[in-house]
Each structure stands twice: as structure tokens, then as C-alpha cells.
Image (cartoon, rainbow, N blue to C red; front, side, top):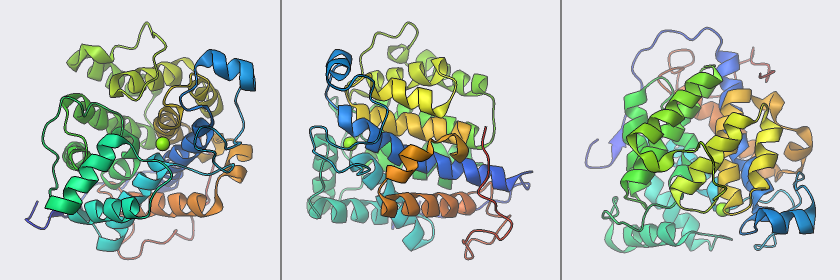
Length: 331
Ligand SMILES: [Mg+2]
């Protein structure tokens, strides 16, 4: 990385066999963040019992929640992800300073919700120009993992770039080994999902994280779904691996309550990458804020096409949808 924070990512890679499928799953990964965020915001901070009593089974995009959202409105999870995507898009590659500027612009706009660690890190950048928060035992929240989708899509086909950029973006606000490891792991799961790997392969990634950091063990699952990155990923892993489709995974997640918009966003990212767009219920997509829906889809395709995996399929400068792209069926 140069002093400007700029890194180019475009090594030559062999052509993937089915770029249409890859793009479909890339779109679903980013859409999944927004859908999971919008769905989960309703039950954020509630317990499973409170959800049962008040809502029965929460399985519709209805807004509300403690933030009193409109149906389909998203929160910081999606908004910070879009900040990263716009920064990449605007600068034509990875530029950490542009990401930090986008976060700063977002914070100045008085977002609906912002986590304390994110606010602190962004303020630090605005006041001191720091692109890396100092290591902090209190930074093991899930705020860096929730915005991993654009980083994973930009680095498809290059695990080393993923590891590096995951931590660079994370350290703008969160500098903690558990957060770093979680970001890398979730990014790798998205890589595997978008590439069409089997669920067992995604399980190996999750198990690998638990081997490296035993705190992340998720079997048996103890039902804690807080914003502590360990609880967040235990919740995501448990429900993703015991469910068999996107809808079941997300309904289970958001009815677990706790930090439900963020567990929803991360589960939506992984499940979207794995199952593809056709698996995302139309009733949820139709309720999603239209501007958010179209922007996440457009950025997902653009980022994936800039990635090492797909950069040699279409020229980076010409990042529109290919004419033969059918928007198609997932798994
Ligand atoms: Mg949120």
C-alpha cells in the first residue's frame, strides 16, 4: 500500500466457468446484508421470548423496532457497507483514505444508528487523520464484520488480498484480534459461497476460526446474540449451518433477537453468497428500500467484476452488466 492508502488489485486469473452464476451470488451477498439488516432491525435488543409474545414469529419486513424504522429501511450495517462500495467505485480501486472519508461523510449526515466504537474510530480519523485505531480490548464488537461484503466481493479470487483489506477496513474503527479474525473468516465464507463451494467447505472456515480462537466455538450454541463479535458469529454460524435455505436461516436469526440487524446482515451476506438471489424471498425484496436495493445490486456486480476472479472477464472500466447476464437462479 502506498502512503495514499491506495492498492491496486487486478492480477491475472484463469477465467471462471460460469461468471453469470458468480455475479448472481455476488449480488445476493450484498442484497442479503440489506435484507437481513431491514428484517432484523425490528427485533434488535429483544429476547426470543419477547419476540414470541409480541410478534409471534417475526418473518416479514415491517420496520419499527427501537429505531422506529419504516418498512424496508436499513441501518448502519448496510450504510457503512455502501460507504466502502462507493469509495471503491469512486476511486477505481482500494483506497483506505477514501473509505475513511466516506465513513466521515456518513457520520456527518447524522445516521439513524451508529455503534460507539464506529463513532469513536471515525471521529479519530476526522480529528487526527488516523487510518488505524489503536489496539483496544474493548473493540471486540461486530461493527467491522458487518461491513465485510464489499471487501469480500472486491477481492474474490485472492485470499491474501482479502486478509489484508479486511483488516485495513476493520482497523479504521475496530482494532482487536477477535474482530480481525472474524472479518477474515466471514470474508472467506463469502468467497467460498460466491465461488459455488459446498456448505461443508464453509463449515470448515467457521471451524477453522473456532480452532484458531476457541471462544468462537458454536456447537453447542448457547443462544447469546449480543454485539460481541464472538456471540454474533456463534449465532450466525449456528443458524446458517442448521438451516437449509435463505429464508429459514434469516427467520431463525432475527427471532434470536439481540443484535438482530447485524446478525441478520452477516447471515444474509453468507447465506446470500451461498444460495443466490432466487433464494431471497420476493416479499422481502419488494419491501426493501428501492434505492438501497438498486445500489447494493449495482455495487455488488461492479465490485465482483473488479475482483481478481472476474477482472479479466470484463474490462474494469466497462463495469456495466454484460448483455448475456440473465440475473439468474441460485441454489
Ligand atoms: Mg445496525
